[in-house]
Length: 477
Image (cartoon, rainbow, N blue to C red; front, side):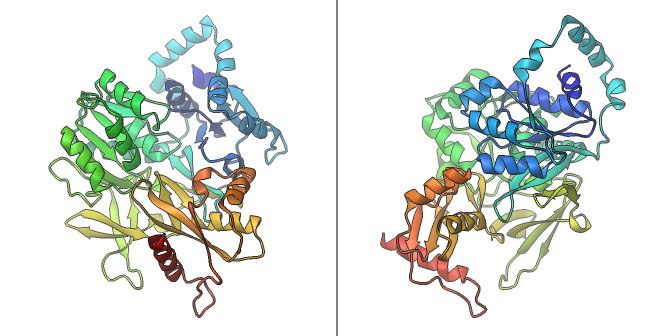
């Protein structure tokens, strides 16, 4: 019924922006759009206005579906107002549609018609939905210059990965399980693993709007009797420390991804008798590539690959063990859309995706050794180091700057800015980030002023030497 209402506002095959938190309305909106042949672009409302507006341009979005209550609660009024001031490629204003207004248009006749269509859904939507291999969902990941890169996923990609996950975990997952998902659906982990996988395999699924509400989530886990929880390492630590005795007793498994799991986190759950299983994925793979299993669990690895996936390692100069991981399978994306070529899908080269991660594979188990690309993962969020450097250059254009990532025991990684600006100031950088619409997450915690940034003989920045300089300075501090 909702999909039919949204179809009246859009064209078949159109990409529609969706700005909603993890609530039932998001799942219904997503599936309603898909049933009527529309593509749902899930917008990251924590990304900052600059990235959100760039996302609209990249995916050629002319309509954004949201909720007044959510906009008010999340204080996104300025962001939504900025949407309404933008123009599409055709020169038309971007429209904002509130679900509260849609609800007012629903009549008794609409409900009866929706019920009839639901009874014959397979036949009815065969003529309205897109092909399984057409775009179904658009997600956004950071580009090399900090502008969003759109990842276009088909229904085949998403359903394949949901089935792969369930088949991989059978018989440990069953329809009797209750899945609890506090991870946002604008990230593929929260979308496919946390939402579509349990729904499409008959598991009751509990959604929660924010993973940061540690106390509320632990109480809801207890109240709902959840048996499977999806989280990142950072969030899992928070839940374990916020929980009262018995709050997490119903959990059989916690599935962690998006960042490396620390041994201290494992220890917290081992004491409570809950098994923490670490997995690995990429948005481009819908996203899950590998995951540990009960009885086949090697801490420190991200587990064996899912069924139906092929992997290969490309040798990397200077690395003796392992290589750069490439994957292929039915869950591999249709392709990228980039800001410089909006609406154009660039398919993966020869059907393989280069993850950019350096890994070793032993007896089928994948161990992540490092990332080849210049990105940092902070609390599960990917941050472009090049974009941080560009931000510093906007503020201090006459000097050189390099951003590096260092291990952080709490967040996974932290950023440090090495600069030749003598009076560089963190507060000034934070103010510039807010002005440019960057999230505060992107502002380095440490600023190191140097006389000159190390360079190689070729004139390029010596990143290894720069990182070492930061490590030594941090040790002294």
